[in-house]
Image (cartoon, rainbow, N blue to C red; front, top):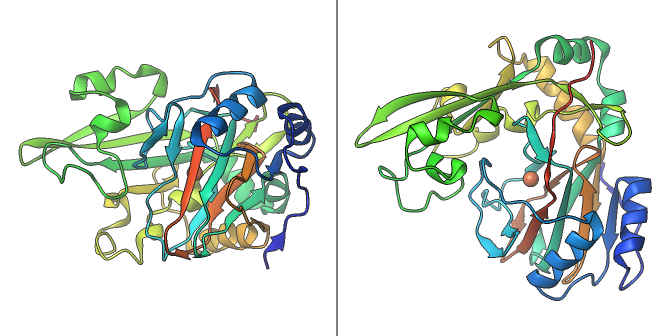
Amino acid sequence: MAVRISKLCTLQASAAGIKETLDAVGYCVARAAASSPEGFASLTQEIWRSSLTSYMNGTSHRKQIAPGVFSVNLEPPELPVQAHSEMTYLNQFPQYIAFWAKRPADQGGVTQICDVRLLSKAISKSLKEKFKSLGVEYIRNLTDRNTHLPEHPVYKHWQDSFEAETPEEAMMKESLNCKFEWQKFGNGDHARVSFVGDGFGLHPGTGEELFLNQMWTYHGSHFDEWPTYRHLPLSQRPVHARWGDGTELEQHELEELRRIHNSSVQEVQLESGDMVILDNMCWTHGRSPYKGKREIFVSMSPLVERIGAPM
Ligand SMILES: [Fe+2]
């Protein structure tokens, strides 16, 4: 059962006030925070006292709205986006993430968040041990810009993800610690990019041990309702996650992850001009299905390195 959030900043909250709430609670909702994408960018930079990051190496197709401000992902509106910590399928991810509403959806499209501290406690001992001993393998099957439509509807081509023109350039991103496999497809190359990361990590500020993975939301079953992908084996869908030793998540494990997420979802109804800002390791984010036009934009702080939790 979703719970409505009550911790709101007052109208026209200052950057310092928002940061104080963010540090104390891990997230903050600010009413009427900005009136333009540029104003949103300026406010978020003031809050985290640093520049905005690009979305390089990310998976979802996003449009740049203003410097450091992007559209949210383009997943089908009739399907939910399950709550996740941004870019934790890589070894570097943003410390903070913020969403600003230019125009909320006509119907639905509510921003959903989950408290990672609660998730970390709710997970069973046996599943936690498996996350810690095996880690999670994230697989991305990225298309080639030269052999697909000019603009992929939802996910990036590998050239756009890695901001590279050749496979060699893409693979030079050594800091990613990703494994690349290439498969000829017409005149181009499909990229299968995989990364194995710890399932739990340490918060760089507080040292807390937190559930830090996208096993459930990256799992190929996400595409079971998508006509374009549902006929494909899990590991050939656009993204998929499995245990770090290459074994698949068992059905009861998938159901446990779904259950603990669903039981801790909270909702944030953003009105035009509102912003929600989250500590990306402490709160996950997603959205409910929606109808009509929805314009929610995102900005992210600089990346932090994954710090694996001890066994
Ligand atoms: Fe996201």
